[in-house]
Amino acid sequence: MIINIFTDGACSGNPGKGGYGIVMKVPEKNYEKHFSQGFRLTTNNRMELLGVIVALEKLKSTENDIHIYTDSKYVADAINKNWISAWVRKGFKNIKNPDLWKRLLPLLKTHKTTFHWIKGHAGHEENEICDQLAVKAAQSEPLQIDDFFENQRDGGLFDK
Image 1 (cartoon, one colour):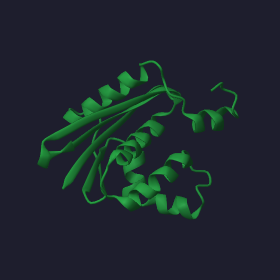
Image 2: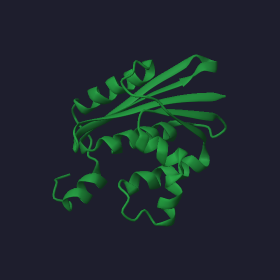
Image 3: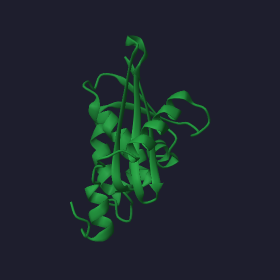
């Protein structure tokens, strides 16, 4: 079975309030589900990446072909151009968002994924829905705390 996952991240300020949006579709079963979450202080790239991670973590089976559609060159190129392998060899030294890349790695080994880059804000229906979900999540309350980012960025000076 094929599962199509569409993701997008948004941030108001970079860093700033952010969120991700996910649309998951299983055409064979005419199934569609939406997910989103907002964070009080994060970056756009973290939200782009977290959307992919959360979507893969929600899958109950590893037997499906997963097609991930993202408008993030950062995410798509890291996988499709295999930058991530070099980052692993270097122990993620000087790589941004190592916590999220390390969280993604086992998911990529577990699931059969294909990443597709799509142009953002170009009228792609699912991408537009993901963008709306991400923006709305970033504006919602209560916002979650992106612990790793806040602790890394400010030496743990933010309250929890």
